[in-house]
Image (cartoon, rainbow, N blue to C red; front, side):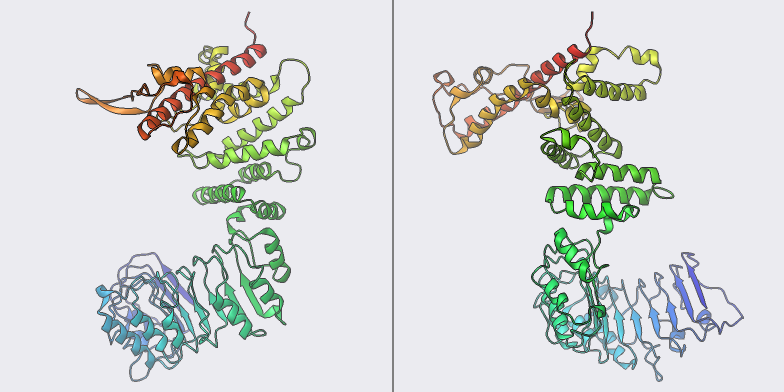
Amino acid sequence: MALRLGALDVGRLPPISARFEHVRLVALSHMGLSEDPSDFLRLFPNIDTLNLQGNHLTTIPVAAGELRSLVELSMEGNPLHLHANVFAPLTGAEPTRIAALDLTGISSGPQMGTSADVIAAIDSLAALPTLREVVWAENLDFTHEQLQALTRLPDLRVLDLSRCGLRLDDEGSAFLRTAAGLQELRLNGNNCRDLPDLPELTSLYELGVARSGLDRVPPLALAVLAKHPSALYVLDLRGNRITTIQDDLLPALDRLPDRGSVAVWLDDNPLPSLQIQGLRAIYPDSFQYTVDDWLYFSPALKRALEVARDDPGMRSFIDWFSVGIRNTEKQTSGGLSFADRGRAAAVLQHYIGYENAHDPLPMLVGDFDQQLRQLRTRLQARILDRQTPNLAEFEMHFHLFESVMRARLVRGGVPFATFLAEHYAYWNHALTERYPNFEQRRAHLTREAFIDWLSDAQDTFNSNDQTPRVGEMAWRPYLGLMSRDWSEGLAFWDTLDDDLVEAFSEPVNPSRWPQVMLDNLVQPDASLPSPLEPVTQGDRIVWRGVGLEAVTDVDWSARQPVMLNEDQLRRTMAIYRSVKSREVESLVRRITMGLVNAWWPVP
């Protein structure tokens, strides 16, 4: 039987006259207790487990030393004052039989006692004849001397120092070398990247180094495997950055005579899919991407995502997407609906090209895979924007991607008519949300407004413009498929791009540059876009474009190679960015107008 009370914040416990001799576990967590609850605890004389987590106790309850059956005590999160007598209730004339003590979250810093006091408190635990396990996680104030005192405890078998901010390299792990009797060691959440093999730990059979910054299997793990080939062994390597186990852990596991005696977990490490498969062949439950748990209904898709993650860009996107879905589920009362879960799964299916997600297009469009890779690259860049995409936007991307692929297959009629129709439908939907009344909306449903919408893009000169445009994301990337003018128009600027990249160390050759660029280098057009700067006008601040400086100290008319100095290059780059931006936007609008006018003729 157990009594569990929690999160009641009562401050103190009421007096009760009854006794509860049948109760074996008492948990009084997060109840705001600040006074010794011994009177209450004495009502439960036969408990073997006492959990006082998250209260405000500064001392061990006196009654804890009177509970003769007590074997587990948790004081986690209490502000214990650490001194030589802090554990006196447990270590009196007749010490308790406590085997496990949890001090998680209790600081050993100067605010809780001098270092000498803390060491004296730890040393006093040696008087507990049955103490085998100490959990002292989440203490960022440990000193080397305090850690050394812990490992001096004579019968210590289990030590948990998770999330203590330790750097466990050769020097930082030296305190462990005296803990020869340790059987279980948990160092999760510390810096274990350079953890040595620690040959002194001859009895160790459980090692926890999850989320410890590892980029390889630590030598200690391999050393223990080699020492105890047939003993029970637990290795927790979850949540690290281990990229390969091909030449160390896999061969070591494969050599074990009794594979059933080992439990190994490598969840969430960025392993190649073939190594994951090799690991599962030995231990089927040893690996998963926990961020994909929301896909519990589709194990096959989860396996396909493991393979897709072999590509670094795809890994970044899939991880980002799954984290977003997981967080949304946590924030949604009752969790995600099955319909929304299915929509999210469909996005990933289309992203990785899962099975027949895009059928029959991959068989009909010769460069389909190339086009899909380009879309993935755009989406990988899109998730880095300040205003990140939602599920509906991803659906829009793949819907219009497939639409333009299908439109390429149509022979005859208005070019890309179906693609334009899909964009028109999406535009009309967006207008409906803004103008639910049709009469209001009809005034905006003009051909010119449609062209504006398709041609619109973020203002790259205005850092306050963070709103992505549908046309920029799902129309502009396909202009090269719809019009030869797009690639030809960009070719001029590609040449200039190459020249300016080399301009830091080599002469530029303006004879290959567009005339519009040369004209603006001599006299920048006042209408050119440029970065905005704040200007005070009266009692308010307004933003205006920064004036562009001409590069008249270079003879551009000679059209001869010239080496630009730093200031000339700075002014040239500023004008180039502005001119290119204006010309590209003009090219987008011109091509868009031609395609829309053919599809939407106006008498």
